[in-house]
Image (cartoon, rainbow, N blue to C red; front, side, top):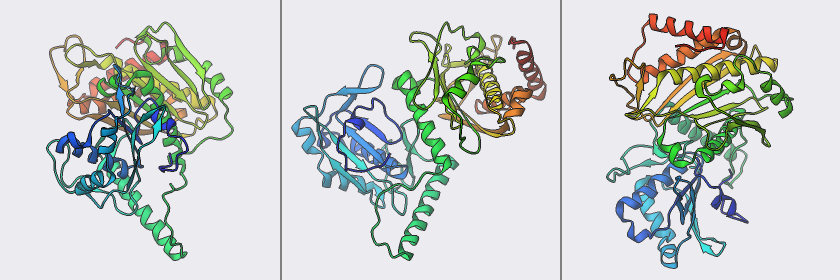
Length: 432
């Protein structure tokens, strides 16, 4: 998304219906009445947007009962006038070093006035927070915008590396412009790389899943995500090719997703403009969503059933890992890409204080996760996964997830579980 105030129509941003990495919504409010903590919260969102891709902070849109930003109340005259660019800028840049570059516009849409803060990505140096404010801001940290629409401190190595890489890229571009004698520096985004192309498809898939689930479920319940793709974007594959090979999958088939014991009565299975898509019929449980893109990206999101005492079942998680890997191994092999090395990324979101239940007999024992999200990445060829390595790879993912829940599996446990997974691939039955 190109960040600019040159918008002939702000409706697309206002009515997008969900928050994402570049758009955040706030209910109507008065800047002069939200207090120091409320203004610090705005500063956190603005710094996070500037340190990531830039974006828009839209004020005047509330959340409905499902947590989706669809209450288009707009702002009254006093509320809108309280958002003065000089006052907002003075407050935000008291906390940000260097100063954040942004514009503030007040479009009237469908007879209602909204305030939109247009935040530009940093030019040379990322913005560090140089002062603290209660629980909203910490001194000396970089805030970033995450794919699930949170503005938080960067604590993962890949997030810090991303900030550093963008800063270095900006410095190289500035030096190149100087050497070429170019004096004007615009705010245009650089041409996307192939990795960025996959990232844009991933963001599209996440937006679709988030819209299907609703913001409340997406932010609060345990969500499993899988992102699988080759090392390069594919060419010459059509939606028809994808659909034909997907419908031909046997062990497991699409009906086994997200796990064979889910007992989903009916799945919606259809083509969008960009991908082949599937999700449960409205009212069915569990909630899940998947997409296969002809470019080579598979994305899925699954809302895991939550047991009493804020727990999830380890058997369900294990089945989900296996079915996801086996499906992709067979699918990419059918496309003639058996030798392709696939990047396999599994995420488990909203895991803070979540318990992992290993068995019915172990119900009283709590294996607790103390981090917000789990991120695990591996690589394997499609042919290996299709040839039986899906069981071993699923076991590796599961073992690492157990570690995040502070539970270690011994070698005997791993061998026993792997054997059960292999038996499932052979017989189509899962008995763990």
